[in-house]
Image (cartoon, rainbow, N blue to C red; front, side):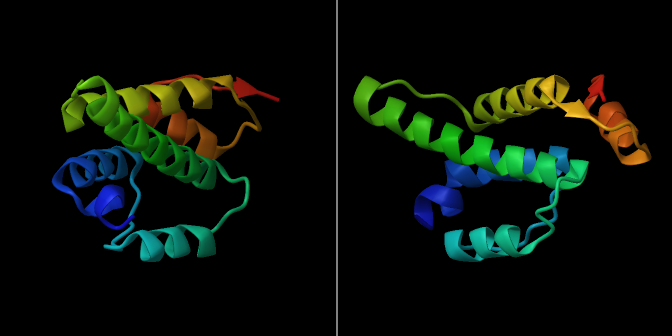
Length: 119
């Protein structure tokens, strides 16, 4: 697990790009430490927490999917392409959520270049 998430060169490149774009300040180097840090953090329904969880889940899924494509289909993508796909998926998910209007939501909208549904 440590190698696949997020210590190999490929997955580290994907995770670092997503972390940078999403402003995630996780400095852990092992899978267990990363999961523990993210699990012990603010898991409320604040927009920052939602973005963090979406990005982490999308990274785990996409890296696992890429691993399977490499093994079973002999298909390979570059880390930048996988990260772009993850960020686009997170963006689409954020746009589909119904959120309360707040300063934090407006900041996320501006940072991600999106408009969210408001309740």
